[in-house]
Image 1: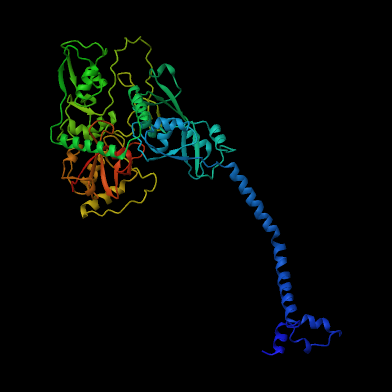
Image 2: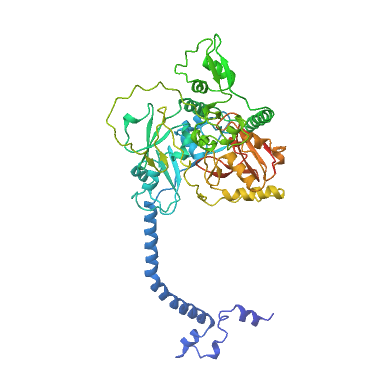
Length: 564
């Protein structure tokens, strides 16, 4: 390349190639020469663009300030809204118990049970992940427009304390947060029954200490006062369960296998009848209860024993074949009403009494009510003092809970759905979670599709219609409505077809469980696929979908039957 080329490309005037065409240096138009160069044209264009942008920024300054103010205002609102609950998670290790985990975090076992949906007697499993709340109480997931006061009263807690704990300035202001910690709260009555064990719920007006059962305590839920009578035996059993070390899945599987074997063995024999027993020398109530596999209170109640320590040699006793109650049918009784009165599933009543027709009862007929909570007999009351006659006050009704004093002087929860109340369709409280599509044969898929229509419907002891189902009543209704005849008794459902191993389950199969509220076969549902089943669970959840692999149900699994 020539020297002139390098000079033109790299010289001092290399960016001013057109300078000689404009004018001589030092002339009056020299500044035009500088302005007309490519370099100056570039800078001039940048300057013009900058000048055109700056006014937009100036005009938007007020708007930006307004946005900043709004952001600060929103931040201030969030600061007065509920703080996120400091929820932690704990993975259960070998040797730990529910009690030891509760002590580690300074909580009560009940708080951990409530947060994780555990019943009083449910085991915890090694490797299980538990939700740990920051304080004793309940974690509530807020709905739109709820206030701290509403939530606190719902769980029987103090509104000001709940607001202060969550950093809420005004307990009556609608909250935007997603959850609220309720320290000192406890689940609603229908949710707390499983947590408190067998209790008596009574809705009352003013708390009258003279009218309360001995040993009872009061719970306040908003404007509703509840009288609770706890079962000391159940409380002790719950305490023992909390102290028990965590179990392994192998142990749970072994327990399920034993339950399955027991159910199969029971299905091959007639239902056991009450035993007429004559007391022998050395007999004790506890010894007889252990020998026949029932609770001492079952024997006491069946025989009306006032002094349980005073058995006489030669005394005649009736020993029920299962923990529960022996009941004499009264005029106008129905089996559904009896199940509701004793708060048990109707299916085992059919089984233990070998009833061919669940709709036919005879006055005076003796029925075994398995799983019912027996009451300790009480001495007859002294003769009443004559008093001026006065009109009878109606029973106190509040939110479906009825104050009722039975003839024995005991308090109980009156049934909220007994006849002659007209049956009403109860819609699901919330949309159901998506579930796997049924992939079994046509009839099994039809059973699942029909059963899924009742997700969220309520649970009613003895119920067999959409107005309310118990577990075996739900299975019975779904099969009958899809053209499959099925027994109303649970054992009859268990023997309605071939037994299916767990790894061969198909949608529509009936799955069974033992030792839930009573020993032996006591619960069932319909398998829907994907390791899940649909069933009428309990009063707090109604018809719901549950995983077969949950610790509670896995340890009680007792086999499956294909009735379709």
